Image (cartoon, rainbow, N blue to C red; front, side, top):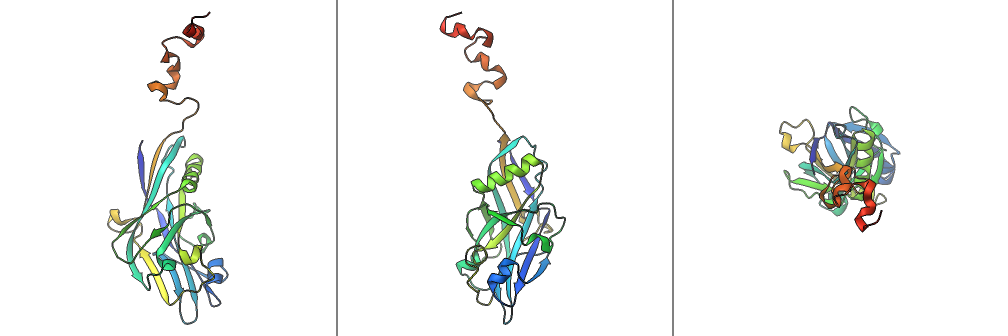
Length: 233
């Protein structure tokens, strides 16, 4: 089966802040900000809480709409880090985004988080590490919906304190930064890899090694004379 490797075309940071609590920041109840940097933030300063999500959009419209994804991964590369190494900061997961049409990251994409679509990846704190998110059945279903509709795919990368423990306020400034689509080294840019094949219905193309159009040849008889397989008219 073919594999399509797609470099992100739109990416960046969508961030929410609140002077009240991290929960309010997660809920989008404070002030929005964006940046071209791909960053996931779990931050408390002396006065403000920040929740940052990295947005990635991949142009999957070049894949024929009759294709079905059977496996998919998203790779990102750790570029920079600050702060602690707690699970709340370093455990990351991808979520589908309900906005796959923006041409640049804006405040509009922060609150577009849909279903969780990947495994949990421990990002760690070693710069230069390539990290792979494996999409689960929900993620494959999302990709297949987008492919069938001729749409791009978009994701938000979130930390554990964001998606699992928002009522727990972080300590100090913690973030992880990732290479973006403008990186001079193509291999460092975020990449979506999709293994796919033509959708199959009925017996499909490989039943007993013959094309579905020639299924009558399985026993060497025409379908009009199928009765002769068992010796009756």
